[in-house]
Image (cartoon, helix red, strand yellow):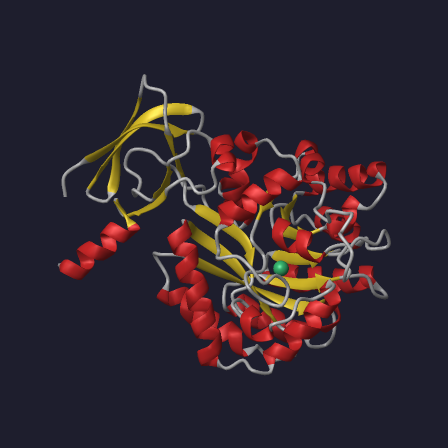
Length: 393
Ligand SMILES: [Zn+2]
């Protein structure tokens, strides 16, 4: 294949020419021209649900709250077979690849002591998609289950599969003691933790406080990710600031999920929501907490729209939380990569030519023109072209 040069593209804040040859980046040189396009590293989504994805159509009903969404979802689970999960998750992965996602972490509902059907299916898919989309699994168990006598067995299986341990944390009795039990399971097996925490707007939801405290006390910096944290947005600002400062010191990362939170928080039939339900991400980042933005639900009981376009969720987050696009574009790539323990993907000479080329001059331009043409390059060629070449070879 002949070398190809992408001239005057924006990389970081600079204008550069990127030359691609033999599937790799041959060189990156400064350009004097004003860029009309930009290149981004492949996107990293730290929080999706491939097990429940693409069920919205058959569920056919709009939930009026997070709790109703959980009921609709549990009813749908009765229909799950390995073939069903495989077909739906495969569609999600194909969409993710087409939109430029190179790595993702999928939560997998784990509601009984034994490993769920979808756990094995997603393990198989992780193997099959290796080199295309990296799939990490996180167990998503109710806190009560994980803190019960079933916890060690679940944690053993998660450890054996090189996955991440996680719990759904939403109020309840004896929460600090239960969280301490979960941290003990993780520590004993050197597991990272990933929580769905305080996904509501009640000020009594303070699970994140305990998680931050335990992370600091047990020395688990860089190993704990907190998803949602919506309730922080409802608490007194000084109170939230104290928690965020402590989170930064403890080394806890946060992932905000704009689409699902805007859809489910402060939802009531026949009434327009007044509250956003998005965690105070600006304050979190200012305090020093790594903050990622992620998709969460795609076409399921919790959120019936979407197609694994992380830049769409990113744009929604930018608009809803008043984020500066140039400063926050890393919340869809390098920041979640670090939160998942992955090395940052570099666009530099010698690296694989894997990147996204967008006909937008900057992240702010991309917010203005969400339909700007996007080309996902893998191994030195746009995805479509690579497929055509493979078909004609
Ligand atoms: Zn989630």
